[in-house]
View 1 (cartoon, helix red, strand yellow):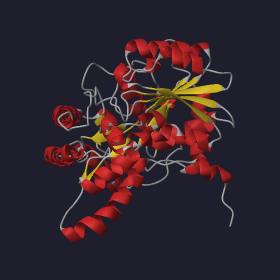
View 2 (tube, one colour):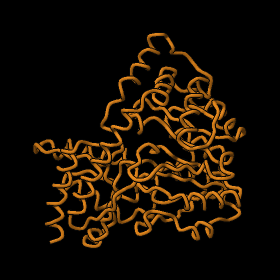
View 3 (cartoon, one colour):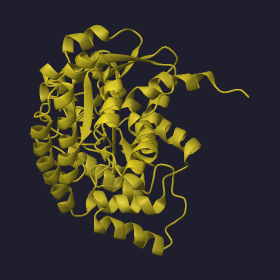
View 4 (cartoon, one colour):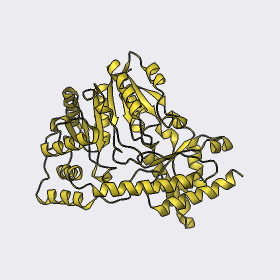
Length: 399
């Protein structure tokens, strides 16, 4: 039975693949011994969806708002997202600039589908979320990785960006705040990237899913830079900010009417539209009270500070405090050198010997080698127990 050759180019998200492996390991090897894993790897908010948002979804179901909507979403929901995006980016958006999706992933996937032809090149700032580069390969494109160095505070080298542009470059993907580094691109960086995009007539995807989880400074969007509103596709969603991962709701926003039409056309061939009741819950999320969002942000900041201290006390580990999101990208190069193994094998070793689950940096691109990602969305007890286990293991390993 035949399968498409392009499937060989499609990667995955390590957070889910490794979770499946870990669950099997825990069940078969740890549970019989009365042990368990400490999970510190996935970006799954431990908070419940705020009550007002849940009630909006329930109300929609009770009122039988359970039928198809237009492909791009209900107009009142699109208007609410447009207002929310205008406030968050400083770019004036209208309802007609918005397409509602079943998650943020589809919006990125549809946009890449609309842009990339065989052989096209895409500038990827690496390390980054794997769904930024996996579909590029799937559609026949070539990811061009620009390293985000820890010593440069995970800012790109602009000369490297300029030198990477060829006549095949069609797109640049920006993710700030970043998964996995927690880095935030400065105003100077965004301005320079915007000039490069305009000069070379590039599309830009700006993934701003963590725009409300800022620990230092304020959120800046490349969409607000001169010449960017009509060449940028803003990707965002409800999962992280509003603890709505299971609702699977996201959106793309762009002033480019032709691009929005292409995204809508592709979505109409895929999901038709997103769930009606979930759209109405999103409308409440983006237009209702934001108190819960701020409380979650404060709690993430508190846990960030705890985790930074704990991780830097572990032999062979070091980490800078992330400025946004809820991830800590820890340097483990001393341990990789000690055991003469890559960070993926080190992650497995830590899982098996310290019984803590992290993610290897290479799941986020080739320049993630030598790093592991922690997530600080769990309880304080989880953070402390996980770091305690790793520290005890590392003290023996580095002795």
